[in-house]
Length: 271
Image (cartoon, rainbow, N blue to C red; front, side, top):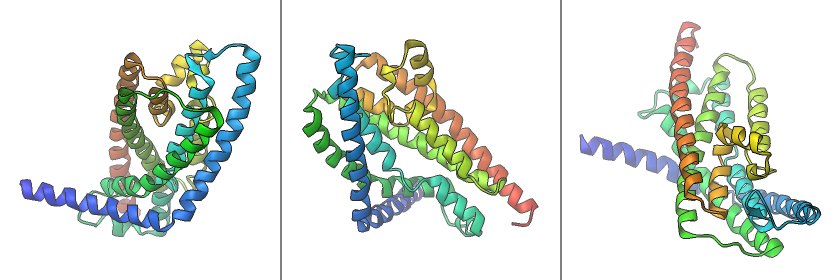
Protein backbone atom coordinates (compact mmCIF):
# COMPACT_ATOMS: atom_id res chain seq x y z
CA UNK A 1 0.00 0.00 0.00
CA UNK A 2 2.82 2.37 0.93
CA UNK A 3 4.65 1.52 -2.31
CA UNK A 4 1.54 2.30 -4.38
CA UNK A 5 1.14 5.70 -2.70
CA UNK A 6 4.85 6.43 -3.18
CA UNK A 7 4.58 5.58 -6.90
CA UNK A 8 1.57 7.87 -7.32
CA UNK A 9 3.38 10.73 -5.57
CA UNK A 10 6.38 10.13 -7.83
CA UNK A 11 4.13 10.29 -10.92
CA UNK A 12 2.68 13.65 -9.94
CA UNK A 13 6.14 14.93 -9.04
CA UNK A 14 7.32 13.97 -12.53
CA UNK A 15 4.34 15.82 -14.07
CA UNK A 16 5.25 18.97 -12.11
CA UNK A 17 8.93 18.54 -13.01
CA UNK A 18 8.24 18.19 -16.75
CA UNK A 19 6.05 21.30 -16.74
CA UNK A 20 8.68 23.16 -14.70
CA UNK A 21 11.42 22.50 -17.25
CA UNK A 22 9.08 23.18 -20.16
CA UNK A 23 8.36 26.58 -18.64
CA UNK A 24 12.10 27.25 -18.24
CA UNK A 25 12.54 26.53 -21.94
CA UNK A 26 10.44 29.63 -22.63
CA UNK A 27 12.33 31.87 -20.21
CA UNK A 28 12.09 34.85 -22.60
CA UNK A 29 8.31 34.64 -22.33
CA UNK A 30 8.61 34.55 -18.53
CA UNK A 31 10.90 37.57 -18.52
CA UNK A 32 8.51 39.50 -20.76
CA UNK A 33 5.77 39.02 -18.16
CA UNK A 34 8.18 40.31 -15.52
CA UNK A 35 8.74 43.44 -17.59
CA UNK A 36 4.96 44.02 -17.61
CA UNK A 37 4.93 43.65 -13.82
CA UNK A 38 7.74 46.22 -13.51
CA UNK A 39 5.87 48.68 -15.73
CA UNK A 40 2.75 48.35 -13.60
CA UNK A 41 4.76 48.80 -10.39
CA UNK A 42 6.25 52.01 -11.77
CA UNK A 43 2.76 53.34 -12.60
CA UNK A 44 1.42 52.35 -9.16
CA UNK A 45 4.40 53.94 -7.42
CA UNK A 46 3.75 57.29 -9.12
CA UNK A 47 0.02 57.08 -8.45
CA UNK A 48 0.28 56.23 -4.77
CA UNK A 49 3.05 58.73 -4.10
CA UNK A 50 0.65 61.45 -5.27
CA UNK A 51 -2.24 59.91 -3.30
CA UNK A 52 -0.26 59.80 -0.04
CA UNK A 53 1.10 63.32 -0.62
CA UNK A 54 -2.42 64.70 -1.09
CA UNK A 55 -3.72 62.86 1.98
CA UNK A 56 -0.89 64.31 4.08
CA UNK A 57 -0.37 61.05 5.98
CA UNK A 58 2.34 58.40 6.04
CA UNK A 59 -0.05 55.48 6.58
CA UNK A 60 -3.45 54.55 5.18
CA UNK A 61 -5.15 51.42 6.47
CA UNK A 62 -1.97 50.52 8.35
CA UNK A 63 0.13 50.54 5.18
CA UNK A 64 2.88 52.98 4.20
CA UNK A 65 3.40 53.85 0.55
CA UNK A 66 6.34 51.44 0.40
CA UNK A 67 4.16 48.63 1.78
CA UNK A 68 1.46 49.40 -0.77
CA UNK A 69 3.88 49.24 -3.70
CA UNK A 70 5.52 46.03 -2.44
CA UNK A 71 2.08 44.50 -1.87
CA UNK A 72 0.97 45.37 -5.39
CA UNK A 73 4.24 44.00 -6.79
CA UNK A 74 3.55 40.68 -5.09
CA UNK A 75 -0.08 40.39 -6.15
CA UNK A 76 0.86 41.25 -9.73
CA UNK A 77 3.67 38.68 -9.64
CA UNK A 78 1.43 35.97 -8.16
CA UNK A 79 -1.36 36.56 -10.65
CA UNK A 80 0.70 36.74 -13.85
CA UNK A 81 2.59 33.54 -12.97
CA UNK A 82 -0.65 31.56 -13.41
CA UNK A 83 -0.83 32.12 -17.18
CA UNK A 84 -1.94 30.37 -19.31
CA UNK A 85 -5.00 29.69 -17.20
CA UNK A 86 -5.99 26.13 -16.39
CA UNK A 87 -9.51 27.00 -17.57
CA UNK A 88 -8.23 27.74 -21.09
CA UNK A 89 -6.31 24.45 -21.26
CA UNK A 90 -9.29 22.36 -20.11
CA UNK A 91 -11.67 24.30 -22.35
CA UNK A 92 -9.48 23.38 -25.31
CA UNK A 93 -9.36 19.72 -24.25
CA UNK A 94 -13.15 19.54 -24.08
CA UNK A 95 -13.62 21.26 -27.45
CA UNK A 96 -11.01 19.19 -29.31
CA UNK A 97 -12.02 15.90 -27.73
CA UNK A 98 -8.59 15.20 -26.21
CA UNK A 99 -10.34 15.02 -22.85
CA UNK A 100 -11.31 11.43 -23.71
CA UNK A 101 -7.62 10.56 -23.82
CA UNK A 102 -6.76 12.61 -20.75
CA UNK A 103 -9.30 10.98 -18.43
CA UNK A 104 -8.02 7.52 -19.36
CA UNK A 105 -4.53 8.22 -18.06
CA UNK A 106 -3.52 6.14 -15.00
CA UNK A 107 -3.91 9.05 -12.59
CA UNK A 108 -6.41 11.65 -11.43
CA UNK A 109 -7.41 14.17 -14.12
CA UNK A 110 -7.67 16.95 -11.54
CA UNK A 111 -4.31 16.19 -9.91
CA UNK A 112 -2.67 15.93 -13.33
CA UNK A 113 -3.71 19.51 -14.11
CA UNK A 114 -2.92 20.71 -10.58
CA UNK A 115 0.68 19.52 -10.62
CA UNK A 116 1.08 20.70 -14.20
CA UNK A 117 -0.12 24.14 -13.10
CA UNK A 118 2.23 24.25 -10.09
CA UNK A 119 5.17 23.07 -12.18
CA UNK A 120 4.90 25.51 -15.08
CA UNK A 121 3.97 28.54 -12.92
CA UNK A 122 6.85 28.23 -10.42
CA UNK A 123 9.71 29.52 -12.64
CA UNK A 124 7.58 32.47 -13.78
CA UNK A 125 6.69 33.24 -10.16
CA UNK A 126 10.36 33.32 -9.12
CA UNK A 127 11.30 35.48 -12.11
CA UNK A 128 8.46 37.93 -11.39
CA UNK A 129 9.35 38.24 -7.71
CA UNK A 130 13.07 38.67 -8.36
CA UNK A 131 12.70 41.37 -11.01
CA UNK A 132 9.69 42.95 -9.28
CA UNK A 133 11.56 43.17 -5.95
CA UNK A 134 14.48 44.97 -7.62
CA UNK A 135 12.04 47.44 -9.19
CA UNK A 136 10.18 48.04 -5.90
CA UNK A 137 13.48 48.50 -4.07
CA UNK A 138 14.58 51.16 -6.56
CA UNK A 139 11.21 52.95 -6.64
CA UNK A 140 10.23 53.07 -2.93
CA UNK A 141 13.09 51.50 -1.01
CA UNK A 142 13.06 48.48 1.32
CA UNK A 143 10.39 47.48 3.82
CA UNK A 144 10.70 45.47 7.02
CA UNK A 145 9.79 41.87 6.26
CA UNK A 146 9.70 39.45 9.20
CA UNK A 147 10.40 35.72 9.28
CA UNK A 148 6.85 34.95 10.37
CA UNK A 149 5.46 37.25 7.71
CA UNK A 150 7.27 35.24 5.04
CA UNK A 151 6.46 31.86 6.62
CA UNK A 152 2.73 32.42 7.10
CA UNK A 153 2.54 34.40 3.87
CA UNK A 154 3.90 31.40 1.96
CA UNK A 155 1.23 29.20 3.54
CA UNK A 156 -1.47 31.61 2.37
CA UNK A 157 0.18 31.83 -1.06
CA UNK A 158 0.13 28.05 -1.52
CA UNK A 159 -3.51 27.79 -0.44
CA UNK A 160 -4.37 30.78 -2.64
CA UNK A 161 -2.80 29.07 -5.64
CA UNK A 162 -4.84 25.94 -4.92
CA UNK A 163 -7.97 28.07 -4.76
CA UNK A 164 -7.10 29.81 -8.04
CA UNK A 165 -6.57 26.39 -9.63
CA UNK A 166 -9.92 25.04 -8.42
CA UNK A 167 -11.87 28.04 -9.70
CA UNK A 168 -10.09 27.89 -13.08
CA UNK A 169 -10.66 24.12 -13.20
CA UNK A 170 -14.40 24.60 -12.71
CA UNK A 171 -14.54 27.35 -15.34
CA UNK A 172 -12.75 25.08 -17.79
CA UNK A 173 -15.18 22.21 -17.10
CA UNK A 174 -18.11 24.49 -17.86
CA UNK A 175 -17.15 23.90 -21.51
CA UNK A 176 -19.13 20.64 -21.18
CA UNK A 177 -22.31 22.72 -21.30
CA UNK A 178 -21.47 26.06 -22.93
CA UNK A 179 -19.71 26.68 -26.23
CA UNK A 180 -17.28 29.37 -25.06
CA UNK A 181 -15.99 29.90 -21.50
CA UNK A 182 -14.29 33.22 -22.37
CA UNK A 183 -17.10 35.28 -20.80
CA UNK A 184 -16.79 33.41 -17.48
CA UNK A 185 -12.99 33.79 -17.54
CA UNK A 186 -13.44 37.54 -18.18
CA UNK A 187 -15.77 37.91 -15.18
CA UNK A 188 -13.33 35.94 -13.02
CA UNK A 189 -10.35 38.09 -14.06
CA UNK A 190 -12.30 41.30 -13.42
CA UNK A 191 -13.29 40.01 -9.98
CA UNK A 192 -9.59 39.56 -9.27
CA UNK A 193 -8.81 43.07 -10.46
CA UNK A 194 -11.48 44.75 -8.34
CA UNK A 195 -11.59 42.60 -5.18
CA UNK A 196 -8.26 40.77 -5.38
CA UNK A 197 -5.89 43.57 -4.39
CA UNK A 198 -4.34 43.65 -7.87
CA UNK A 199 -4.79 47.40 -8.39
CA UNK A 200 -5.88 48.68 -4.98
CA UNK A 201 -4.92 46.96 -1.70
CA UNK A 202 -8.06 45.94 0.17
CA UNK A 203 -6.64 47.57 3.33
CA UNK A 204 -7.34 50.92 1.61
CA UNK A 205 -11.02 50.12 1.00
CA UNK A 206 -13.70 51.77 3.17
CA UNK A 207 -14.29 49.64 6.30
CA UNK A 208 -17.65 48.19 5.24
CA UNK A 209 -16.37 47.28 1.76
CA UNK A 210 -13.11 45.94 3.16
CA UNK A 211 -14.95 43.37 5.31
CA UNK A 212 -16.95 42.18 2.29
CA UNK A 213 -13.90 42.03 0.00
CA UNK A 214 -11.80 40.10 2.54
CA UNK A 215 -14.46 37.39 2.72
CA UNK A 216 -14.77 36.98 -1.05
CA UNK A 217 -12.58 34.29 -2.69
CA UNK A 218 -10.86 36.88 -4.92
CA UNK A 219 -8.98 38.42 -1.99
CA UNK A 220 -7.75 35.00 -0.89
CA UNK A 221 -6.00 34.20 -4.17
CA UNK A 222 -3.06 36.62 -4.00
CA UNK A 223 -3.82 39.57 -1.74
CA UNK A 224 -3.91 37.75 1.61
CA UNK A 225 -0.37 36.39 1.17
CA UNK A 226 1.01 39.75 -0.02
CA UNK A 227 -0.73 41.65 2.80
CA UNK A 228 0.76 39.38 5.44
CA UNK A 229 4.27 39.50 3.96
CA UNK A 230 4.47 43.30 3.95
CA UNK A 231 2.93 43.77 7.40
CA UNK A 232 2.56 40.64 9.51
CA UNK A 233 -0.49 40.35 11.78
CA UNK A 234 -1.32 37.03 13.48
CA UNK A 235 -5.00 37.86 13.89
CA UNK A 236 -5.20 38.69 10.20
CA UNK A 237 -3.50 35.38 9.36
CA UNK A 238 -6.13 33.45 11.33
CA UNK A 239 -8.91 35.34 9.56
CA UNK A 240 -7.40 34.77 6.12
CA UNK A 241 -6.61 31.09 6.54
CA UNK A 242 -10.08 30.27 7.88
CA UNK A 243 -11.61 32.09 4.93
CA UNK A 244 -9.33 30.21 2.53
CA UNK A 245 -10.23 26.85 4.07
CA UNK A 246 -13.93 27.66 3.69
CA UNK A 247 -13.58 28.51 -0.01
CA UNK A 248 -11.22 25.60 -0.68
CA UNK A 249 -13.72 23.15 0.80
CA UNK A 250 -16.58 24.67 -1.19
CA UNK A 251 -14.77 24.82 -4.54
CA UNK A 252 -13.20 21.36 -4.07
CA UNK A 253 -16.66 19.84 -3.66
CA UNK A 254 -17.95 21.87 -6.61
CA UNK A 255 -14.99 20.81 -8.79
CA UNK A 256 -15.55 17.09 -8.09
CA UNK A 257 -19.29 17.44 -8.67
CA UNK A 258 -18.83 19.38 -11.93
CA UNK A 259 -16.29 16.86 -13.24
CA UNK A 260 -18.55 13.87 -12.49
CA UNK A 261 -21.58 15.59 -14.03
CA UNK A 262 -19.51 16.55 -17.06
CA UNK A 263 -18.41 12.96 -17.68
CA UNK A 264 -22.02 11.77 -17.45
CA UNK A 265 -23.07 14.49 -19.88
CA UNK A 266 -20.43 13.35 -22.37
CA UNK A 267 -21.47 9.69 -21.99
CA UNK A 268 -25.17 10.48 -22.50
CA UNK A 269 -24.46 12.61 -25.59
CA UNK A 270 -22.01 10.13 -27.05
CA UNK A 271 -18.97 12.44 -26.66
